[in-house]
Amino acid sequence: MKKNIITLLFACLVGFSSLAQQNFTLEEAIDFATKNNASIKNALLGIEDADQKGKETRAIGLPQISATGSYKHFLAIPIVVYSTYLLEPNAPIDQLSPLNFGTVYNVNASLNVDQMLFNQGYFVGLKSVKKFKEVSAFQKVKTIQDVKENVTKAYYGVLAAEKTITTINEIVTTSQARYSETKAMFDKGLAEVSEDDITQLHLNGIMSQNALKSAKRQLKDAKNLLKWQMGMDVSKTLTLSSAFDTVMSRLNTAQSDVSSDVSQNIDFLLLDKQRELNVLNVKYEQAQYLPSLSAFFSYQQNALRNNFNLFDASKPWYPTKVWGLNLSVPIFSGGAKASKVSQAKIQLKQSENSLAQLKESLSIQTQAAKSTYDNAFDTYTTSKDAVSISEKIYTNYQLKFKEKSISALDLSQTEAQYLAAQNQYIQAMYSLVVAKIELDKITNKL
Figure 1 (cartoon, rainbow, N blue to C red):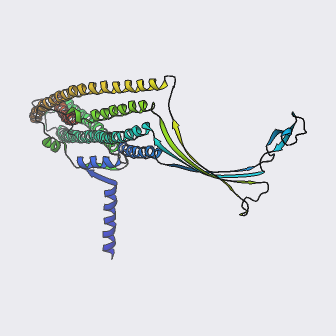
Figure 2 (figure 1 turned 180 degrees about the vertical axis):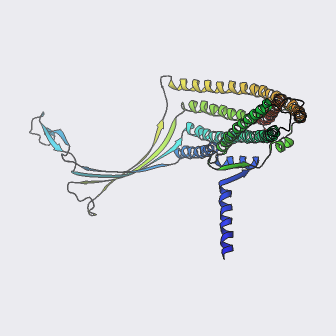
Figure 3 (figure 1 turned 180 degrees about the horizontal axis):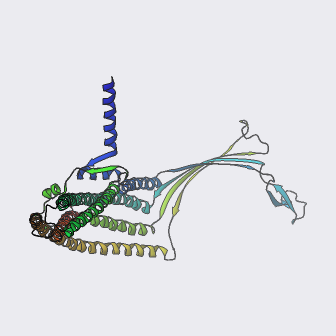
């Protein structure tokens, strides 16, 4: 029984640990972001909003039904004045007499139905709503693409920070071991080591420790950025299951010519949809010159009482029924309609100019992204060779220091050179993957 309880507690602890700490591959991080990033959530809400706007617009063409009711209690019944001569021929012709006109209690209940029969602007509006929904869908695609780009860059940023820490850790371990070993020999008088060498080795250790602390802070910042891009709670622990070297080995770093179908670029598609909306806007403003036709039907019941017996079934209610047509024909608006049509045409021309400009810009950006990638690839190759060379020099200088053929200062300079080469190499790795991401994005391969 006790064993079972211990097993259960252990399982719970493991479960809580897995909830608090999450391990992600790049694909898992992107998938998490597509479900939790606030920008993507807003893009989905934008599609839903566009759908509701479509329903709102379509509803305008459906029957509009309303019911109204009113109750009036006249504290003073309205009075009309009539010529007394009409009822009393002997009265002076200019004599006027008052007459109460109405009842004390008036109740009215009515049902009204309106139906649009023809309105060209409405039909254009329906097409505009459809285009607007397409724009929202493309906006969602663009948002997902941007989030994927940002998450990928942030993910590689964490990997770069982790690799930097690994490199500095190796140097810290080596420096501490060298300092401890050399100092012990110096204290026992077993080696020809000067006090300056001991001081220099101690300084090297302090410097490498500070570099390690700085790298760890940078890693924390990089992880927080990744969590934010993913839409993850920053209080949770995040670990990555990929190694930077493994990522680089899978990365297609071969230099090659690229081609891109500009018409499939998401920015181009969005702007083209805006142009189509502007085309419909011109048609909508032109439709305001056309007449509109609607039908209506109204049914009323009126109760007119001098006593408050409104619900007495024996007392009559007086009905009114009417139906008809309303025709509205625009004749003159002082030039306002013509001005709106001109504005819509100007906006259309602007969107066409912007589309042509974007097409040229995307072609230039594609070539620029290719050049950036090629430069990053060359820098990466050079940095990789530089690390290999500086590592050999650093290893040789460690042997020379043990043999007492060089000073600790010489070794320190070589160590700094090796660390700088490692940092440049890691930065070159990161720059290369970022350049690849941007190249894939501009060529519609992200």
